Image (cartoon, rainbow over all chains, first blue to last red; front, side):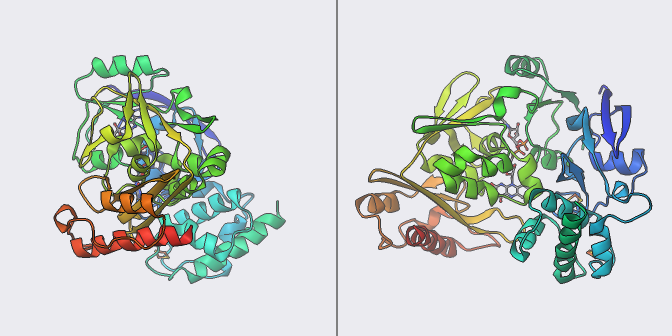
Length: 159
Length: 262
Ligand SMILES: Cc1cc2nc3c(=O)[nH]c(=O)nc-3n(C[C@H](O)[C@H](O)[C@H](O)COP(=O)(O)OP(=O)(O)OC[C@H]3O[C@@H](n4cnc5c(N)ncnc54)[C@H](O)[C@@H]3O)c2cc1C
Ligand code: FES
Ligand code: FES
């Protein structure tokens, strides 16, 4: 099989690489670039631990090929903090005990930011509906919802 | 996942040429179903032909009382589209009930129809509505498309380009979803044109089907006073999620619910 050459921007850095066509985005991020903040929970599009942002919307990195993202841009959890300060959504998860083991958290945060990009003051019901693709085995979701409510408020205030 | 050659053509002609020149190729749309089966090594195509760079396939338009949805429109594009919301708002609702937001961002209407999963939502809706499926070389009537489980009348090298739907007087679709996947354990779609009503069912059998007795009864009298248990249990699925009897009952319950919500 032929390797293919692709250009992709990850966290505002441009990469030009030769890859095997069957390279999944999640493997490219973790194995090739060492960005291990994005997790693999199920590898079958169910759990959302692998979520990253593409055009401000969350997608599951375990279910897309790098080849499908030629000339496009991806943001991962590693790129949310600015000037050594947590992103408001990260901060809100910390303030509200929105995580226990933390395995689902990178995906939860990317999913939450994706929601706020589309609807900056979601109701509790809208938050819960939006999280249908994110599974958490620890928290029972209560504090995740609280975190997202606070994160939304802080994101609105910080513009 | 086994390896393959990857192609991203810009036109339909190019896509068909690549297809015809490859050993065991597959078209790729959102990949939500195809990549999952490749990861499980259920299939191993020699070549993947990505359709997402073919521009004209992602448009939604309306003309008189018809709407046309490009096959590469994602579920989320359909659910947020103003034309769809104005003309057949419950089609937007259906699209917004598929999987979860990340699945809706990638998965396409054409991919869902071509895949013809008996538990998927689009096929039942397309079968209930007056709809034609346009491909690169012909127009297929909705009733001629879904021939079996994961089986359509599409040729192997045929690309769905758009779906054309006549705007109904009434349309709704409700499913009783599997709580994990959101696929339908049973889904019911009802479309009404004048007094002519078609009721279709997803999730309950090996393919989406028209419920004849219910359609006939609702065409005569559009009320929730419907004949019960009209579908033979032999035709219904029986699995860990639900027995055939339970599914038969759900068909009646969901049908009444649609009429009562109306
Ligand atoms: C977690 C999860 C939950 C889901 N929940 C639901 C649900 O609740 N309801 C539901 O209906 N679906 C559900 N799906 C399926 C989803 O809707 C998929 O988007 C859909 O089945 C396939 O669309 P795709 O664009 O991803 O197609 P792909 O996976 O890219 O392709 C599927 C098949 O169709 C062929 N194909 C694709 N486009 C065309 C075309 N234009 N012309 C000809 N052939 C084509 C491909 O060759 C392939 O064989 C779910 C999927 C996942 C992963
Ligand atoms: S690892 Fe991607 S959805 Fe679970
Ligand atoms: S905090 Fe452990 S899985 Fe969510």
